[in-house]
Amino acid sequence: MNVNVWTSEAVVNAVMQGNPNLEVVMSNYFKAFILRLGDYEIRLESITSIVELNQKVLEGISQLEALRKEFLSVVEMFALSNHAILEKTLPAFFKNLIGFYVERDINLYSGESADMLKNDHYRFFNQFLFISVTSILLENQCFGTLKAILHDKYNVFYPSYRITREINFIRYRAYNYTLNQFMNTAQRISVVADYIKQYSAPADFEKLIRADILLYYISLWHHTDDNLDAYWWPELSVYNQNQDILPYMASKKYFEKAKTLFGVNTIEEYKRLLTTTPDILERNGLFRVPMLPVGLEHDVVGSVE
Image 1: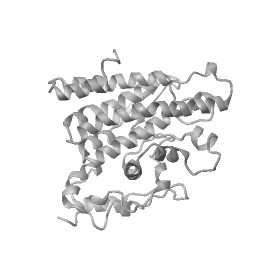
Image 2: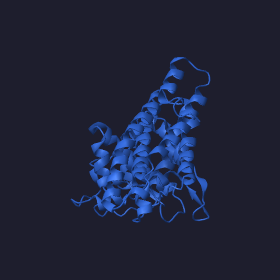
Image 3: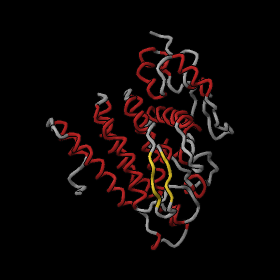
Image 4: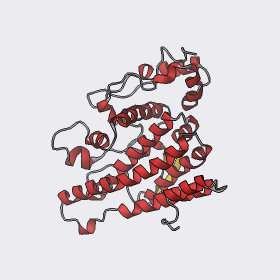
C-alpha cells in the first residue's frame, strides 16, 4: 500500500467530490495511517544508556502528536454529522491497530526492561488517541460507533508467548514507566496526565477527563480476563473536579440515545445497573473518580423532557 496516496487529504477530497467509494477511501486511509506508525519504532542497537532511551521516547511522543491530531481531524469531520461511515470503519481500525503492534512484535504490556521501555511512546500515543476519539464521539453523540468500539472483544495470538488472549479497548491503556517513573523527577501523581494536559486546549482537556472516567465505568461491564489489564484505569482523573461525568443524562432524549452504551432499554434498568455494579476502583489519591451512581446521574437520569 502506498501510504503517500491514502492520506487525510485523500479523504477530504473524496468527501468534497462526493466519491461513491468513500468507505473504501476511509478504510485505506486507516490502513495507511497504521503503517505510518512503523516509522517511529525505536531501535535499541544505537542506544547506550537509559537516559538516551528516555530521550528517544520523549522525542517519539512529540513526533506522534502530529499524527494524532491529523487522525482526529478526520474522525471529527464525520462525527459532526454522526456519519454512518464511522461505525463501519472505526472499530476495524482499532482492531487492526492492535494486530499491527503484534505483527511488528511491539509489546504494549508494561515493563521496566529496555525492550519494553522502547515502546512507551506508542503506549502514550495509544492512550491519548483512544481517549481523544472517545471524547469526540461523546461530544457529537455518536453512541452507536462508540458502542461498537467499546463492546467489541477479539482474540489475539501473541507469537512471542505462544498464547491467545481475549482483549478489547482496555489494551489501549498501559502503565507508562518512562513518564511516570524515570521522568518523574518532581514526584508527580501522573506525568502521563501532565503531558496530555500540556498537549490539549483547556476546554478539550475537561472533555478528555470525562471521557477517560467514562472508559473506566464502561470497563466495569466490559472488562477482560487479562490479569495485566482487566480494567481501564483513568489517569486523567487526577485533574478531575467534576461529579457529573455524563451531565446530559438528565435529559430523557439524551438518555434514549446514550442508553445503548450501557446495554439497557429503560431508565429503571439503567438505575438498577448503576446500583448493582461493584465499583472496584481504589480511590487512594491517584484517582479522583465519582462513585458510579453519582458520576452517571442515577438520581436525575431522564428527569427532564
